[in-house]
Image (cartoon, rainbow, N blue to C red; front, side):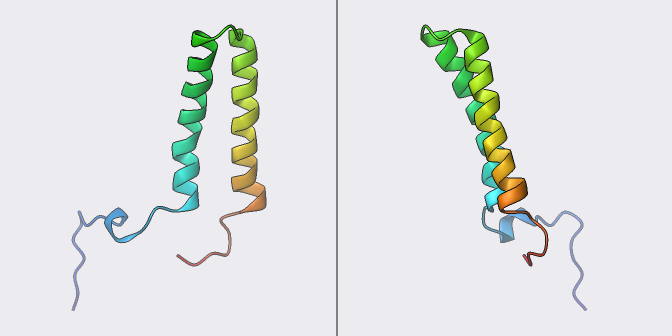
Length: 73
């Protein structure tokens, strides 16, 4: 009988999925947009608007184009 340890990590057995990359990409987009608005002449409102637009494209792709339903992992 195999007994799983309560503290066994499921992450160590899996490779990085597309949705993990999406979750990693969103803060990178936000921090990058903020850094661009600080370091260049781009106003913060424009940087924030573009950051929101790009983030919404990434989330829209993850939710509507590649939905996580019906996939066996």
